[in-house]
Image (cartoon, rainbow, N blue to C red):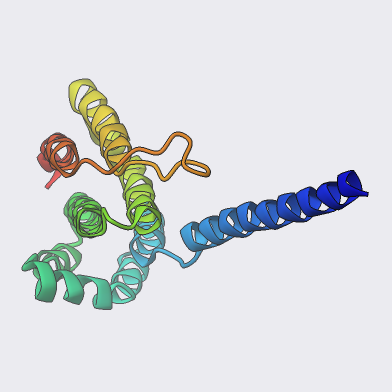
Length: 195
């Protein structure tokens, strides 16, 4: 009788724990996957328009980024609207692309700023670092080999520096703000040549 009761209690506990693990995992995935990235989508539309030599379509795509560019101006004092509008007026595809590269870099910096401010919340920090990696992948082919290597190592260093909550405490590692800052600076140095 005792063994049967113990088995029932054990099964119930395991079911609850399994439910918590599945719930946490699905929440983490949905949080990380949620939401579009207007700068990524806008950049794709702009690059397609430039490939078609269609500056009207490029302007429409840029207009769709007005809110993001305004945010960067107001919150980070980075004016991308002025050079972008000039590049479009001049029909200078290389300059339009360069401004978009700069926008991507600013999005990486913005996500890493957010991650650094949220090092106490592993899930938020991780999502922000992963999103910064999405942006980094867009410009990685434009970096020289040395900068590409540095950026790759630094983004991994930033990810490691946010720590790890572990599973039921196993594998737990605290965030390391000093290492985060160091790796972030290495990453920024590697990509700043594209500004």
